[in-house]
Amino acid sequence: MTSLRRILGLKNLSAILRRDFAVRRSYRAYLWFDLIFGVINVGVYFFISQTFGESASKNIDDAPNYFAFVVVGITITLVIQASTTEMVRALRQEQLTGTLEALLVQPVKPRELSVGFVLLPVGHAMSRAAVYLLILVFVSHVNVADATWAGFTGILVATGLAMLSIGIGGCALTLLVKHGEVLVGMLILGMGLLGGALFPVDVLPNQLDVLSQLVPTRYAFDGARAAVYGGSGLGGDFLALAAFSVITLPISLLLFQRALAAARRAGSLNQY
Image 1 (cartoon, rainbow, N blue to C red):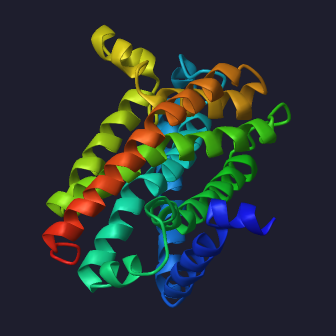
Image 2 (image 1 turned 180 degrees about the vertical axis):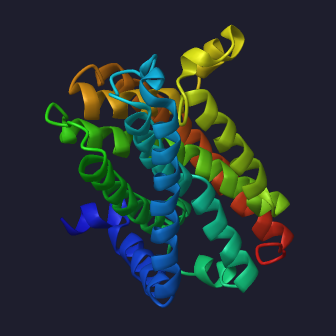
């Protein structure tokens, strides 16, 4: 068991998580404002859906209405952002505060560092996702009796792993050019729109509809909605996300290791 913990780096991951949680907990007002803003955001989409009436029930997969469609899109977007832009922002913050170099002199491997940065943001995103789904059920009275929550959880995890490779790649870019979070944010915005976060991909022009089938976000949104509203038909989406992770995670970790080595040689770890 001890050897397994060492191989997985659980001790280092736990230490990074505890550190980040202690920092985040010291800003309790921010946490509350963040949650309140999220609830208001969901409320805005609820009222937008009311203006559509029944006309918005076309081409929205298994969702009973547009509000139900978009809430699942928002919950998956939270996990996507936590695994990408929030991760890159965490690394950038380490640079700006001058703690990145001190962190790297500790016996922590690059893969442990990259995964450690994303643990708290993903946990926070999942807790917010749970709140949004509760709002969906109790405010709009959407029937989720046929939902498979195990499948939904599996899609969340698969989405986080699939998008983690983009986050790690963004961290590698940030080590080299300092402002990788801007490019990652633009990429995630485009992938979210192409994947169907806020509107059905059926409304896209034919060329963009074909492109949407190549981005992992498409399978994240489709799989999550199938799990919540259909209860089945998400196996293919899960496998697509898993395949994307298997292919891209080793590549992104290698890029991060090389970017880290290059920044060390250049002495630019804490430059901003």
